[in-house]
Structures are given as C-alpha cells and as structure tokens.
Image 1 (cartoon, rainbow, N blue to C red):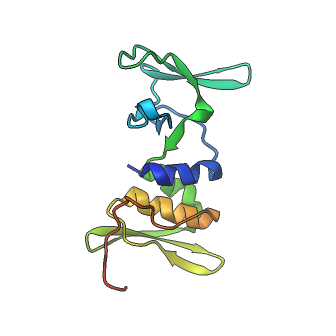
Image 2 (image 1 turned 90 degrees about the vertical axis):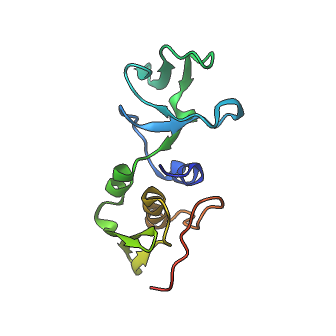
Length: 148
C-alpha cells in the first residue's frame, strides 16, 4: 500500500471521486493509524445537497458516525496509480529487491529510485509527472541498488 506521506503529497494533485474498495485514512491523531475502505456495508459514501460524507455503519471501535469526505486522505491502489499515469507510463521493472517505474515526459524518460513497494514507486512517478515533490519520503523503504 502507498505510504501515507506520498498519499498526502498526491492529495492536492489528484481529483478523487470515492468508489467502493477505495482505501483512505483520516489525519486525526486519535485514529491516524486506522485504514478505512469505502464499502456500502461499512463505510458508505452519501452524497446530498452538493456535499459528500462518509457514514460509518456499525463501527464499534470509535463513536464515529460520519465525516466529510474531503477530510479523508485517499490511499490509491497500485492499479489506480498506474491508471493515473496514463500515456506517461512506460514500465514497472524489478531492480534487485525493489521496483522502478519509468515514465516519459517533456524532458525524456524518468526512472524512480528503486522502492521496496511498487505502489510507492508508482506514486513517485505520478508526483514527477504532475510536477509535485517526488523525493523519497523519510521512513519509506528505498532499495539501494547499483547504478543502472
């Protein structure tokens, strides 16, 4: 799963329309470690009067009934990140114990550092394509490899 720091960096650059099976977290200290999944059975997206809210059905861990969806931070899946790259996506390659994503752009091909999680490599590539901060986040497992 994509790191939370990369998800936070992508947040202002992506337009998220929540769908069933999407994962997200709520950046509030008391529940920041929890990951939620949109599901009509548990976390239902309710759209009314131009607003969208997540309603938590049957949660017992917290007294959490609903929260505005724009507070949540989307944790896009590997395939969602790849889809967001669109035509810029060139390849996902295994390099040593890590994954490198290659994308194309106006300055030619760009290769992410080798990351231990393919989702993080996709996220770094997408940040590069969208003009965001594509540096390796602290606390994320970057795989050290010999020069390519």
